[in-house]
Image (cartoon, rainbow, N blue to C red):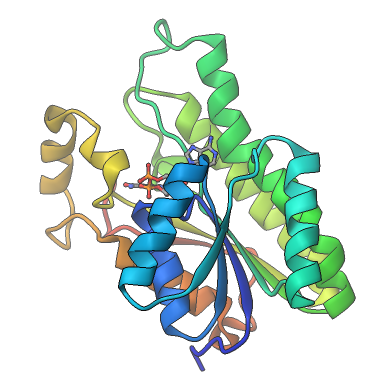
Length: 247
Ligand code: NAD
């Protein structure tokens, strides 16, 4: 039931971290995976990593905050494969600056990648999914959309918006057999976390009841489940994958 033979899956931010692991997971289950990254070099690097693991994927680097670029890329994918089954909106940027240090351009960058990009990719795939009368859109939220965080208000705000898009599109698109869900990761072992100060991470890890930070595969597995037919009656859900962490 978790196999995805010939399914066409797009993963944004698929060049590293949770996104690259998600690309791996879907490749292993037989899907045609197309990853999006921010730069040509990082896309090529990710494709080489996958090739070294005997996995085949395709890659593009549309500017996710530019609707025309995103729509043209998705049009091309649809022309190549004749369908788009699963869209995984994973690209995201974080910030933990205090409000006085957060600039207007920080605010705009975070909203562009974490929120506007999801609007753009979803708007671009929905006509194809409606035509197929089938599709799955999965978004990446965060634990902090539920609990907030002590410093860096814009990132949780952006992830609250992700939850809003998820729940609303789930209701709007259910009549077309398109399911929309989100995964809300806790603290996951990726560059995003290793770039945060140790003083911020170590005390958080001590509070995680499962006693460890999460691995990218923990999130990829949740995406596999939510994208699969096993989740065919699940839509509009924000699934916490956080070891019961509460920050
Ligand atoms: P990461 O920094 O390792 O990877 C982020 C990905 O987003 C990269 O592939 C990068 O290319 C892409 N990206 C960043 N800016 C982009 C841009 N301008 N245009 C296109 N792509 C861009 O991060 P990660 O930890 O793997 O995070 C993936 C997702 O999970 C993000 O949405 C993040 O908010 C969310 N998340 C992560 C954690 C965590 O602890 N790591 C926790 C909660 C939520």
